[in-house]
Length: 274
Image (tube, rainbow, N blue to C red; front, side, top):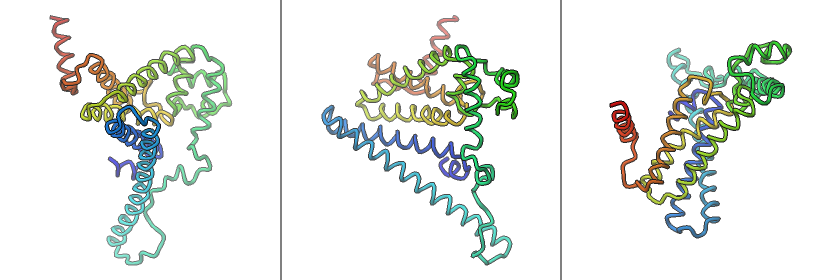
């Protein structure tokens, strides 16, 4: 998966992976510091964990650079061997550069223009929004010279702006309030966990949520769309919340696995509809 992200040329994938790497190493290092020092030296453990998180980012960036260079060299080596071309001093034939990025003066790949156009729509209807399927039609009627109206873009490429545009302030309060409340709840349980096995289980279930949330800055993969990212976000968000309930009920000695969660749901449904 790491090599796939490297070779995909997706800058969103790179950013999400680096953020997940930072948070993963930060949380794991903080757990070890807390395990060794207890609740004392909280500030020292925070800075040590932060340092390890930054170190993880540097390692990932170096690996990204090395694998990209090696992949280009290997691909050109194979291509040259197939063509019986022994001259490797020429410019690389195969490249990982994306034409829509290298040949464009807009570093955001038109995202900034889409976001500005979307914010114009939000300012015109800030309370309840314009609904997800009405973005282009509303833009054509009210902002005919706007970027979304001209290009007919219904995909805003930003989950957070999309929520504001489609549901307005009222919807954003409920959606963001729900997400923030549960993220704080999950992090609180992580910081209060002392069992390493359960802690790692919680961390690895929370990291996919972070990855999709970070990619939501550049994509609309959490709501309003039927993508794999949306499915994974809500799957792991729900399971992370379930794990916090295990802790609250002091059932940490039980096996809080996905299989057990599914079995418990089946038992509840069978009793309810029996």
